[in-house]
Image 1 (cartoon, rainbow, N blue to C red):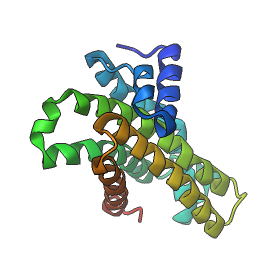
Image 2 (cartoon, one colour; image 1 turned 180 degrees about the vertical axis):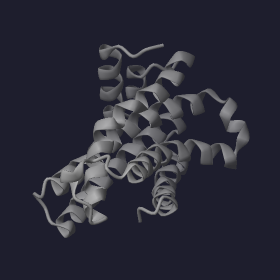
Image 3 (cartoon, rainbow, N blue to C red; image 1 turned 180 degrees about the horizontal axis):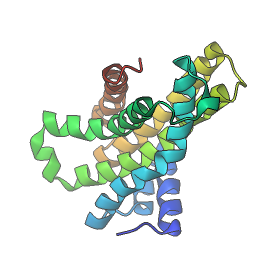
Image 4 (cartoon, rainbow, N blue to C red; image 1 turned 45 degrees about the horizontal axis):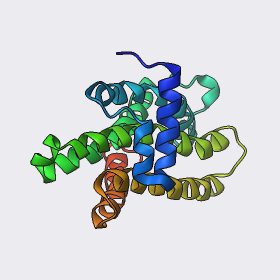
Length: 192
């Protein structure tokens, strides 16, 4: 049940296309049962983004990155856990609201699209984090950059929801609720 480079490239391209092409991008994703489980395996692709986010978080906490990114293992675990939970919490929240949704094919497609979009989202948010961690921006500039990239992430999340649940208000509610859930995860992990 591994991931081939072609599958990864096609899925990442498809998740990016969700922003503009909506449901037309879904064939780029493996929407099978194996594709469902592989989309969780693919979350390991967030490791480079997690490293950039960890470096920025260390600086915000007043820790030097020259001591080694993993010199504070509990902080590394916190960042990794928060990043992973931020992706998994939205599908879990939807199932908590409507348990019967878990048995619908469109929900399976949503989870696959959401997981792959989560990898792209983490990578996008890693850009301002990396720029800050490298000392190329101030904390205030990094916050503005993170807000700009966050708007792209919000659009991507809306595209993933719209592709699987349609153009109704549900897609917008899912995208907006993801912001609140992200904030809740950040608070839970002490990162907000």
